[in-house]
Length: 504
Image (cartoon, rainbow, N blue to C red):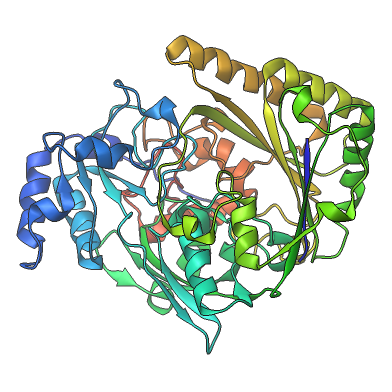
């Protein structure tokens, strides 16, 4: 177990016909269309890759983190587009609509269910990979920055730090996540209790809509601007770039990690943490990581020592908290080195009442039996001050903390995956009495198709999708569907858990 510290009335339902719509024409139509629209400054081979191209597999697999969706039988895009300009994105959308091909949008590739780069029902699709649109432009005078969706969280933090050592941005802890995915789903991180989610600090954006137009906040309107800041990726258009409000950070922060054997004493510490972590000063962030490791790797001492505290700059703390980069220089944040890949399944829960200590003991046993890891992070602070309707992310006041269940494995094959997925589902079911209810809430950036999906690709009605939509968005789901019904009534931007259009 690690304890980490850091200072600092009537409605008509629109039934989408898009499934049949998207399967009626060919890739050749798309390629012919986009070749006519590419600027004379580029050739088709600069941005368009088909399975016949030698670099197709390399590009496709470059940011896929979950090997469950990188098997030989995983549905793959008929074409990959890697835009080098905003006009390339516009052309991709326009030609996909014209050619009647579904589109998937990828920024960082950490999508837990692969919805940004595969199709679970064999529907032909185009992959729009924003990896090369990754500029970060910082304006120190008004403490803002424009960041493109293809930038990673590490790159965003790095380039802000190069301009100022007292400005930062509340990003997530996994620095290889793409900005587009982080901001479109909310974006929880170590500064959430101080400054809220990443998306709470977005003040403008540029989006390509279904008609191929580039819209900013003023031209898209406040409803769409509300929806893209937490309503989940891939539902409303292609967000090209985000204007973010930078936040104040101290020149020096203090970090602390305590690794202990998960015995009775450690359970008492976690139990006490449940009552404190969401109520302490917003300058203090304390999370809990539970994972099975050999006992020999654990320190039996449960007392924090002064020498355990480490002072460093804020950007160094970003590296410290990053999953795989601890101990490396800040330059690692922009190196885009390949990250370790594995097979995995994730699930999430919100806890609103402290779990009894004896139940925690049982919880640990279940996790050890199934070799399951947990990431438990507190709410409170700024998270409780923002109303649940201010953005699509509704899990605000009343939530003590979020649990992320993590099941990773390396053995290949369908049977192995079936076994491991079953184990995390078992734990999730056992946790039912101790977590949020009516609905049992979940975090959209921790995508989980177990909660339900849009049938085959994009074919579900609003009522059917509400089964999973209310878990992610509670009462905000209806407003999201209404926005979708206005900006994309034919449901062009869709995936297995995209927002369905609700047309009044």
